[in-house]
Image 1 (cartoon, one colour):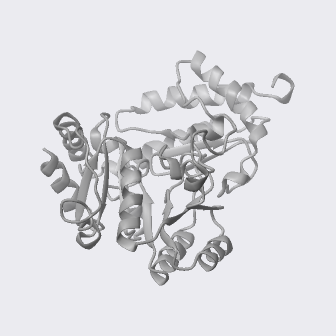
Image 2: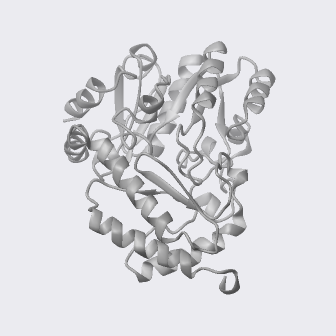
Amino acid sequence: MENELAELILTFNQFLEKIRFVSSGTEAVMSAIRLARAYTGRNKILKFEGCYHGHSDSLLVKAGSGLVTFGNTSSAGVPESFVNETIVVDLNNREAVEQAFETFKNQIACVIIEPVPANNGLLLQDKEFLLFLRDICTQNGTLLLFDEVISGFRLCFCGAAGYYSIKPDIVTYGKIIGGGLPVGAYGASKEIMSRVSPDGPMYQAGTLSGNPVAMAAGIAQLTACLRPGFYDELAEKTNYLIERIKHLASQSTIKFKIFSIGSIFWIAFTQDNTIKSAAAIDPDSMKYFRKLHAFLLGRGIYLGPSGYEVGFVSEAHTYEQLDLTATAFADGLMSLNNDDI
């Protein structure tokens, strides 16, 4: 079943030639980082503030996800020596990336990014910025690592790489490829993957990696994703939900924006039309989200418990359910005012 799921992914993904299964997204990214270091012979990695790549030591540096919710930028128990190998710059900042490559010339093994940053709000990047990362990595012999644990199979079958038509050197996946069961995977070209044991010197193994239950669920899930029109319908449903919310809550006194891509959406209490970096999110705006979250729970709508979390529309959602959700959202937004926050 491991081979069957791998064949299913590789047959319809032009960016990968080999794939290796693990048991979580964290494991996938941890292994991909090790692979980048093994392939390049370099130690440092460059990541972006607010992007979350799992809870391995070297990546819990100015991360997003739950760390932002609790006001932390790192984690206890991470040695300073690990932190020193991780370079952190702001998203959407070409100058900072260029400076990092100049300062640490020939030392950066990989640049890791969520091509659709979705763990610290939905910080949509311009395609030009992702292309810039592709070019500067190529110029410097650095690998470009797309962490698609969230974006993979949500925008299209080939994830953000396919959506933007940008070829990363390594890709990580999780979540969807196990149909809801614990899973992760990392993949690359045959040349890069040849460094992984038993073909090469980079060791990675796991008793439950590629376990048959998760593989069977993944085969069923990804077969469904390959149905003609699957992703068009998902995007249509998501757009329908967003437009209904905006229409019904058009008289709200609280300013809000809903950002989306594919089946992913995020509500932000802001007047800005674009939010491309973690620093652009006003922490004080979370007071509105907390009240909205409580209101929606009372109406039977469950969002992630943090205002930095994104939402997803699934194929299982009906338009009747989307209408109920939009009405509840709008009522919640209309109920907000500055006096009772």
